[in-house]
Image 1: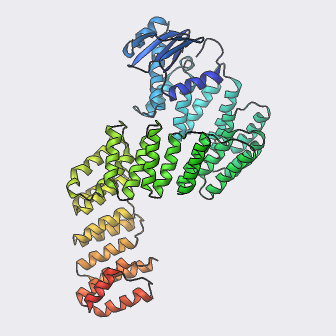
Image 2: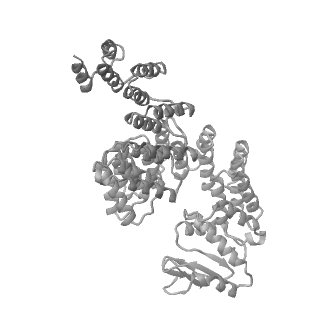
Amino acid sequence: MFNGPIKATISTKVLFQSVMKKCCWKILKRSLIICDSPCNNKFGLCRNEIIVGKRTYNNGIIYENFITTNRDEIKSLVITNNKTRAMVSIINLQEEFYEYSNGCKPHNINELWNYYMEQKRNFLNNIPIYLHLTLLKTLYEKREIEKVLTIIKYLRGRENLVKWFNNNLMILEYIVKLNIEEIIKNFNFLNTKGNLPIPTIVDLIKSLVKEKEIITAEELFGKLGKEYYDVEIYNSMMDGYIKCVRENKLEKSLYILEMMQRNRIKPNIKTYNILLNLFSKVKAQSEAERLFGDIIENGIEPDERGYQGVILSCAKNNDIEKCFHYFDRMIDKGISPTIYHYSTLMSACVKSGYPEIAIDLYTEMVYTTNIRPNGVILTTLMCAWTRLRRKRSYKKKDLDQIFEDIKKYDEPDLIAYTTLINAKSKQLKLDEAIQVYQQMLMHNIKPNVYTYTTLIDASAKLRNLSTALRLFDDMKRMNVSPNQFTYCSIMSAYINNGQLENAFRTFEEMKQNGLNPDIACVNCLLDACNRSGSMKSFFELYSDTIKKYHLIPDNATVTIYIDAY
């Protein structure tokens, strides 16, 4: 990458950060540097200088102006100034990696891998290390282990590789192979030699926790906690508990915080964000708000992740007023909301019965802040449409269009399909709902109990007993266990077709499967007995309601009972 030994400790970090922050797209070849200008889609051309923002730095001197050229002209410019055309391929490959690291996926990862493997070793040596690591990270997340090991093997054989980075790769290779004993053995040896930096220790703890090696991670952390007073090591263990431990995650994380306080390690903004995320998971709104206030009192201004944590804590407790309080404060502090903030607010509004506000938030996000939606937020928008009280705004084309929009960004999931089925079922458009259900099965998406119950209930209301029973059989064949609402819908289907005996048979089946009836199920049968004149069954069921099922009659029960007399 440079003429001379590679200073990986500095150059890799600078280049990686520059790509992740979308600042400058750098290609270094001899004394020539080509940088992506942050304005007007231009490239900056200079010698031995670094472009940061809109200024060019060279040995402490700031240059306000530098030569620029259009993106389309860059390839011919490079060929003119260099002896080899290989730089054109480097530009193409770097642009591919840049799009991946920027969160975009314009090409299939397999195509990028094949392109990577087609290159010769001397060509790959000209590619900055962080681009190899970007591909490695993506493949590891997809569990393409053999490909990951191939990249590690290449990097370890690369010339002029600094010692600590080679040690990192060795540890990473053992992590990928899940060879825990070798990880600890080599880690202990390298650590005693003082060759491992803090980031390697942090990555090792995270990997052990992720692979469910909790005890090993705790033993390693217990040793390192006494030797290294570094906040990132403590953060890694705390974050590991929150993400990968199901039980006692709150107690374990707070214990780590107590250790930090005893060792006089000052928490940083990442520590606070981890805790805010934890409080949101356990619905501890008061603790989240108290911590948020402490952050401000300590002179630290929360970032977007901190606001997301406290907003999510309020949202999970349906405190819409507090959600918007922190959302507005974030904007007042000059922090732009992200799609995650909007998604949290929209979901909270829908669950709290404010679908109109959720739709307004979506409109603001797309047309005011110009944030591109994703499948999750569009599914939330569908839920909002289904709960609108104004019938004139509730149109078939709106829901179908939203569902089609989801397909532009991602494959619709179970929630998206079920939401559309629910919407069509509420409109009693059973044929269309069944078509959506069949699409689910074609795309290998397994319906849940709510999906089937919604379809069965719509069938019962339309007196379509055969469809209700067929769906009920499908449900059992798919190993989806019915709940009380499902059985109640089947009973309604039988009752609406004058089959009271089968309704009671379904009632008994429900009890045999360990499900206690609720008052709605009882009312359904009581009303059917009253209308059919089966008074003996009526009074027996009413007596069992109080004495056997320990249910309290509601207004509907009393009304049915009075009518029976």
